[in-house]
Length: 179
Image (tube, rainbow, N blue to C red):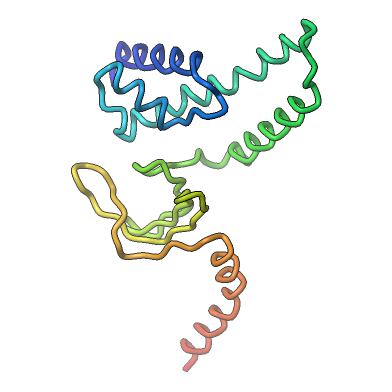
């Protein structure tokens, strides 16, 4: 994306965010509205990531504006806002981690936890309000990586049960390899 397009997209996204209800708006809604206004496909991975970074930067700038308003005497909900800010800081620390590597997302916006091979990966996603850990194969379709039917999606409870069974699985593998 060239610099002029980036500036247009950023300005449009910021305009949408400023006029949006922050309780109900999602990144997808912002991206769709910006795509409609500009007539540009923003679902392409690099454009999607650019929109995500603009949204994240905007959201990071909000607490500082709220702090300024609070200092000007509009601080009735100080305790709630402080708790929210602490949660946001915790989330940012989790995202930044030890500075190892930046989080990677796939074409659907799911977090890629691990690449098992060029075609297989482990992702974390939301589906019908449930968090899923998916281990599956992907294939290229129209230049986008799309999940195939080959794989498994586990709920958090199922993932925890599997994780707890890993030592027994490792022991069984060792026994088979010894024979």
